[in-house]
Image (cartoon, rainbow, N blue to C red; front, side, top):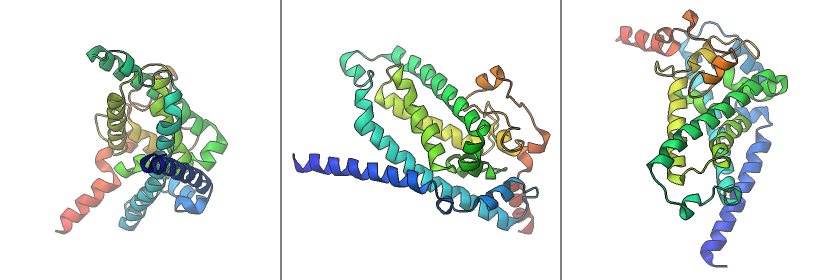
Length: 260
């Protein structure tokens, strides 16, 4: 075994150990930055106009996001090192010619399977009392989320709705590795913007946080488009109480501007 091969093996072992440590740590409430009691109090918080509370919420989003990203990277490296080569689509375009029609087809296949997976697992995180109390409640502590909230999730949720959803389409359809990486990157950008209340978010994910009331009374579970929410009657088109022009962050900016 060469020095390079030995280094790769030890890197893979380190990533495997990191993944196990992340999953173990995710069971600790201390590793999720704050206790469940604080999380539940944030869910019931009505007046978010206080600057100190805004600062606490943003830092909580960032802290949760760091742990989630570490878990995602570890599992992704494990998949690429050990699992990907076992899938029938692996190196498909090393044996077949790649063209623009493969690329266009892969866009729709990727979005269809990822969005279906995201909807089903997201509903599961709500419908299961155990998954809600243990995993998903941390993400829903943010009723007026910022862009940082996209990654502010329990490590297990990050893995299930991140790498698992990202690689699922490759089990059914060959996707070029570069196109696959591009789709994953753009999906992350889209999800970040959706949590920030962008008007072009077709599924109004901001309402899912702002207007949703706990585990069972929620809606807009999909990622890209409202297809599955429309099919299963979990779609909310507009909520006056969640007008993004009157969020905590806009009010804070306006207050600071008046003080200048």
